Each structure stands twice: as C-alpha cells, then as structure tokens.
Image 1 (cartoon, rainbow, N blue to C red):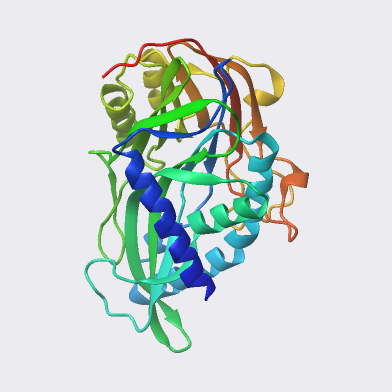
Image 2: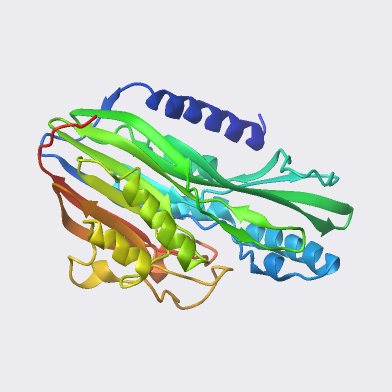
Length: 364
C-alpha cells in the first residue's frame, strides 16, 4: 500500500470516529476522579509564508511565487517536524489538544484552472502525519473534530508545465484515548466558520481566508466543561475583534466552565485579548510566574533561524468558570526542541496547561 493511500485510510477511520462524537456520548479511558486535566494548544504552521503570492502583481510573479511557496513547504519538512511534535506531546500527554494550521497540501497536473479548488493528489496531510508519529510512540490520539477552513488553489511553474497546488487549512481537536482511568464522556461536538473573515486581494482574484472555532463538552466523573479551540485572524485587527466577539456571543456562551485554547493572534493588551478578558476569561499563563509567560510567536518562515525569534505571546489557554490553572509551560521554544536537521517544530511555540476543575452541573 502506498504512503498516500495508507494516510488517506487513516484519516477516513479517524473522521468516522469524529462524526460519531457529534451525536452520541463516547466513553473512553479517562482521568481519575480528582478532575485534574492537562490541555495543549499547538499551531502546526502550514509550512510557508504566503506573502509573496499575495504581493505578486504580474502573471510571471504570481506563478513563480506559488512554486516558491510549495518549495518552502517541502523544505520545512512536516514529516520530520511531526516526529518532533510527537515528542513534545509524549512528554506531557495532554488529554485534549487544540491544533491550528493543520494543513493538507494537494496537487494536480496539468493545471485545469477550475474556479473552485479541485486538486486531489495528496502531497502532505499534516493530520495523518502527526497521528502516525504519535502512534509510533505508542500514543493513541483521535480527532474529535476536524474543521475545514480556508481552501485555496493556484497554479505554479514546473519544468513540465503548470501544476496546481491546493492548500486546505483545518482546526482540529484531539483527545487521548488511552491515558487515564475513570470515565470520560464527550458530547455536543460542534464547529463553525466565523461569519466575518478577511478577503485577501491577489493577482488571481480575491481570496476569502476562512477561520472559525470548534468545541466539545467533556464530562469527567462529576465535572463537565466545554473545551474550545480557535484561530483568529492574523492580518486584520478589526476582523479579529469581530471574531472574538462572535466567540463570546456563541460557542463559549455557556454556564459550563470553559477552557478556550488557540492561536488568537492577539497579545495581552490588544483589543481582541481585552474583549475576551472583559467577557470573564482568565489568561492561565498570566497567572503564573517565569517560564509560563514566555513568548510564542514567531520563528522565521523557513524555520532555520539559528536563534529563536519569538517576540510576542498570542497562543493562549483562557479559562472561565470553576477551573483553575495549576501550572503552564511553553514547549518547542528551546534549541534542543529542534529537529535532527535543525528545523524548529513550528513557527509558533506551544502551550501546555495543568488545570483543576470543580464539580459542575451540565447545562443544555
């Protein structure tokens, strides 16, 4: 069986599990009765800087930029990075993980210039590659939700002619199925794109870069909480604030305790961050001292900068309700965290939070 077919079958099996979670409670091995939980947020990095494509002003520039972007995706080598990310996850074994920029890169030759993305040949499926790397370490993680977001396609130059490259972005919630003893129930899995998204002008026409949220309600013995994962807009603050407001009014508008994780593209003090804090959320890292408040973004696009270039903290674990932080740490930001060839695991660092929850009444 080819690697592509094997990975496709893995994704199919995982998505069947994820679909079932939207309709029924699923009981898997879980936490002990003290209702302590460890969670993680991790931006995987799509593998390249898309700015040259956006900046292109002629057909030649546009085609060359698309080709250069895919070459950078190859050079940033997600199969290698996935193994390093799996090491990170193995060290802390979080029960729930919110992932952003879980890219799928596909291609089509020759280019057919379809008005809608239609390439089907899988070049890299970041979800399958990460799950495979986790399985190699004996870790059994399954996707609760795989939420498709931006889906764009454009032609690039190759020695044999024009080839189309398709990028599909996804946000994913993973749950570890074999980590603890006790009863863990997952229910009410949901996801949606934001109603407000940025439209990016390109030489090939405007592209709406869709972002959104995903949630699942988690019951551990007598404790129920909502776990939410999101990725807010990076390039337009006004849109980012509207998305944060949509989060507050919609998926996290619940009487349940909420653990909200993600790449918020909003550092402390910025409008979107201030809106979320004003809605009752506590920043788990801001409550800690020292290492937990370290920066999370961003390394260089090629991931080969010799020294870390993290300058801001936008990857967050936010808490509301009867849930408290017992400790937060940054992962993937040290020299020893790099891959064997010298790549940073992502252009972001990750956050792992140890939390304690009190007993709650499930709401409708």
